[in-house]
Length: 221
Ligand code: C5P
Image 1 (cartoon, rainbow, N blue to C red):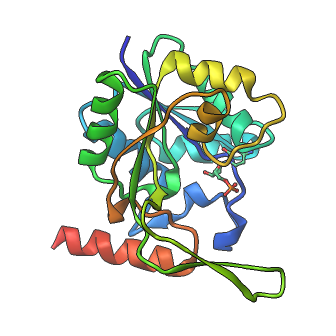
Image 2: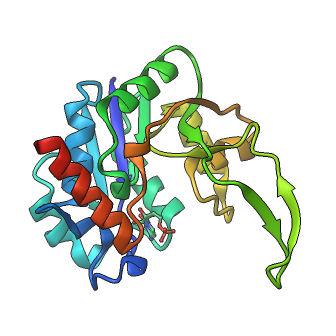
């Protein structure tokens, strides 16, 4: 009865244009998925990690992921998380973490777990939005200025009381939220935030990858 983490990495990762699943792309020589798994375990608060991989890349994913288990994913993100969740039946706290946020500091993992342990059913790390945000119409014309007060950008790992997350997934049906906290909200659950960290940014573009490599090198110096 401990803390398990599910890392849904079964997407194609086409946006990064590497011709392979994004989680296999190396950041300063180490695959993102391996960095993500090692980071979770190095936090000292995670007991078990399950990586959900594209079925056709299972072996490649298992080869780079020396810690944790690797299982095949489903047709979309929600299905892949559900398959990972089925592998961690004994856990009472479940984290869901993007492989692409592979430089997330251990302190963020620890504070998410602590907040779940303190009694919150769903916890997301979040940071203030730095840019001015405007809503536009289909032609790109500004419709209104979105007040930045009270706006936070949500990161991962997201942490859940295992029962809450299981109920949210059982109710998901055709609902396709972009994150698991969204599924909890959909069943009327409360989601709280803890401070995230800029280093937990999501590697999506070639620029993000370059920034991640620079960050790793800086931390090694
Ligand atoms: O492609 P997208 O950005 O929506 O993917 C979000 C996350 O969900 C990625 O980490 C991706 O690997 C994962 N995913 C998955 N199974 C799928 C599709 C996406 O685990 N079938």
